[in-house]
Image 1 (cartoon, rainbow, N blue to C red):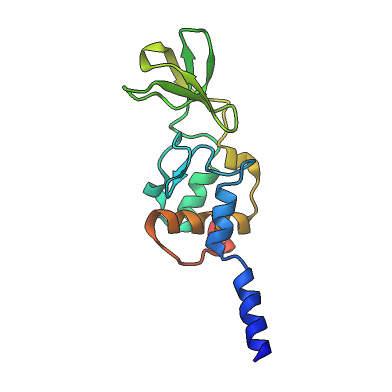
Image 2 (tube, rainbow, N blue to C red):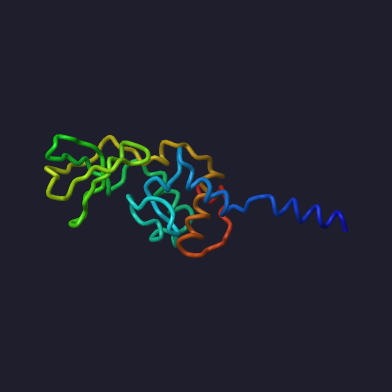
Length: 160
């Protein structure tokens, strides 16, 4: 009986893959939540990851590891400031400087943007964070759970 209780407590203390992925997703130094939100947590500066949560682990890993994204452009403001950022929406009151982690908001509307050009320097932070395949699998398991309620395990072999 004591063995069963000890085994149960030991298993209860081990975090699940989804829990490990959630912790990595929200890690302040190299997590995704600095730019993305899931399940009401994080900062919705970047694209909504719920849209990719139904994709295969390999497809999600390819998107996460991409070094340059189609969304990020070099934004030049009337104030003379220039930085990589997401093009502002029509009703936006701020534009985020993605060269900082977490991104820094600048009070600026779409009318304050002088120009936007192709981004050749900014890199998607996960591409430079060098997550291991096991860590990537954990993050993807969390993304799939948070966005599509998929509790299926993700193998590190699935994200290579």
